[in-house]
Length: 68
Image 1 (cartoon, one colour):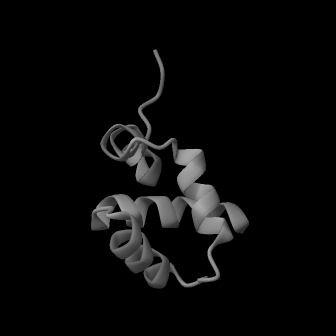
Image 2 (tube, one colour):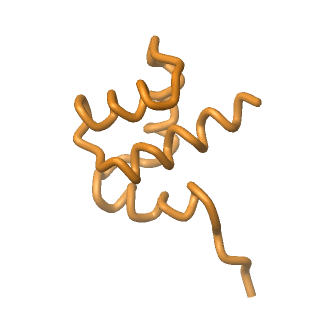
């Protein structure tokens, strides 16, 4: 039995279904953005790419956590 995915990654399947891009592509967009602050990146994903707040927040949180 596989463990249930928790945290921001739990949103990834629905993000891929709803917006038609793999999570890796979204994460690369976030990493290539000149913006660096969490909420700036969330606002940018919402305004420029039409993501909902929860999905944008999950992608940004997971991507920024990888840098640490």
